Amino acid sequence: MDWVQALVLGVVQGLTEFLPISSSAHLRITSELFFDSDAGASFTAVTQLGTEAAVLIYFAKDIWRLLSTWFRGFVDAGVRRTADYRIAWYVVIGTIPIGVLGYLFKDEIRTSARNLWLVATTLIVFAILLGLAERFGPQRRAVEQMTMKDGVIMGCAQAMALVPGVSRSGGTITAGLAIGLNREAATRYSFLLAIPAVVASGVFSIPDVFERGGAGLQPSVAQMIVATVIAFAIGYATIAWLLRYVAKHSVYVFVWYRIALGLFLFGMLAAGQINAV
Image (cartoon, rainbow, N blue to C red; front, side, top):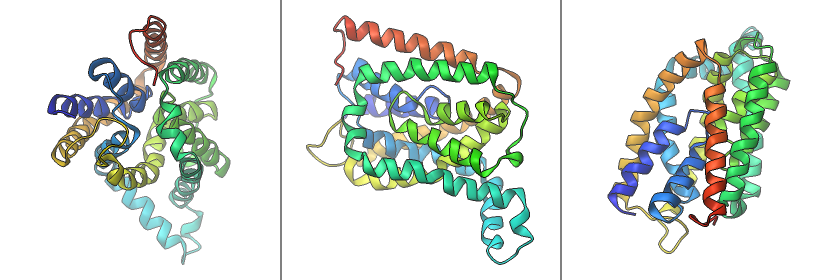
């Protein structure tokens, strides 16, 4: 990996991680189109540490409140009746599906799941699902009104994002809208739900990204740090923008963008302009 590649991919990660358009798909497509190589699942996972650091800082007060409530709930029955205590448990339980499936299918996630034919398909299919959820979801409930069933559903939706093109935020926002959460509530919860899984994935992927002779573009330590810092800075700004946007606008712009990108990718693959693997 050279410095241009590291800088570009850091920017792409920061811009796309929180939008429901799949950052892993954009890193995969960008690296293939412009650098004729796959950046690799490990590079994606490590740069996500930067964007998750942005989540930790942006939602620091919320995270501290949930964590402190969760721990106090072990010894205080009154605390266990609060919404914060329930939400903290929903995050824990919602993380289980992606943890289990990520471990069981680790090799497939890093190889066959990154096929660009599959990426193009998931971009379009999950765009349609997001559009249907936006159109028909009741969108009446706040995060505080979530149930355990809702937490499990959104956890399973997050697990689907192991396949590039699905989108972690896209999957969870789609599920949230479908079960009746309003757009801002679904978006906020998707950020919180992602923290344990993304941090764990990024930390465990650090050795893999520097493995010589491994798959994908191989950055130096300095390039990896710079790409991650760039992802953090741009990701922080993206969080603030997205929360303001979904409070007043539908998500149809992301639906149409995903469909257009998927069709473009199908065209490039059919014409033989880029390789699928």
